Amino acid sequence: MILAIESSCDESALALFDPERGIVGEWVNSQIERHRPYGGVVPEIASREHLQNLPPLVDEALRLLDGQRLEKIVVTRGPGLAACLALGLSAAKALSIALDVPLYGANHLLGHAWSPFIDFHAQNPATFAERLAEALPHLGLVVSGGNTLLFEMGSDLTPRIVAETVDDAAGEALDKGAKLLGMPYPGGPLVEKIARGGDAKKYRFPRAFARTTEARFSFSGLKTSLRYETETMADDALKAALPDICASYQAAVVDALAGKLGAFLKAGSYKSIGLSGGVSNNKALRTAVAKLADKKGIPLYAPQPRHTGDNAAMIAFAAWANPQGCKSGPMPALDIDPSLRMDRQ
Image 1 (cartoon, rainbow, N blue to C red):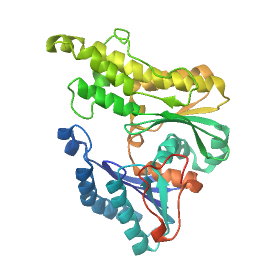
Image 2 (tube, rainbow, N blue to C red; image 1 turned 90 degrees about the vertical axis):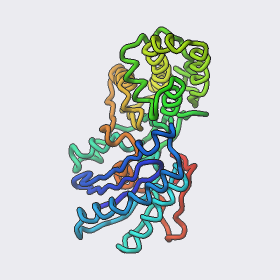
Image 3 (tube, helix red, strand yellow; image 1 turned 120 degrees about the horizontal axis):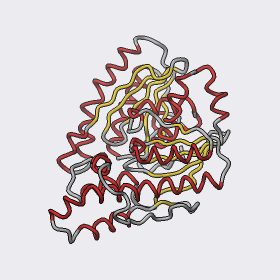
Image 4 (cartoon, one colour; image 1 turned 180 degrees about the horizontal axis):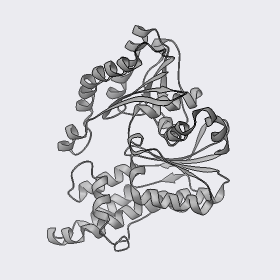
């Protein structure tokens, strides 16, 4: 059994993973309502919430464990907000000492990378390794509020970043665009909801580096374009045009992501596609990526909604599926790394 702790941003989360059964318990305490009045995550509030929320979650996990053998404790060590990561690490170190169980530090981005395979494993744990081998090499897209990157993974199970954002993440662009349009935090899901009634071709927003194998995404210019488009609009005109603006803005984000993914699919020989991170819940994005998979004739793997955001199940699963991606060592040597990259321990 593996116990995982995730506290990289504004979710306090724990999970228990059994290699023979899959995820046997998971707990998440979301802080969205605490941060909504401020229009985004406030690190000081987030860290205080972790301090309050982690102990009862630990109690619940230990009750479910009920004396069963715990092989390791895994905690997210980066990337993320420094104070939030530190609180998760402190809780993990305390548990490691109290239970006399080895402690490992996990990469949050590796958790997202592996999350599409959680259900794949649950379908038949006994044959997971063989079926995974048939899905490699794998091309994965991680899209969240803090990260946007494209990676490939071969038989050595080591991810290699092939493209990443040079400025804003896609989820950040959606949330900030929503804020420019007067919507509350988090605005990305509201943009998607309003976009359903709009014309995605009404406004032409930029798609930086789309449909090329250039190793970068960029979304900062997209927000600037939205500001220029709307800053001279009267309130009534903006309200009337909002569905078309949201649909066009969302289409620009989706085209930039799917276009880049499609370019790499065309240039490579991949046997599966992965889509993960909070923005992977966006139906327009899922539809676009599913079309690419169908056209290529390969499967698309995507996690269930509860495993798309920050969660400990993906941390536990990644620690089991790809143990070389975890950092171990004497207790003092294990520390946080707020700027940790996917291709680093």
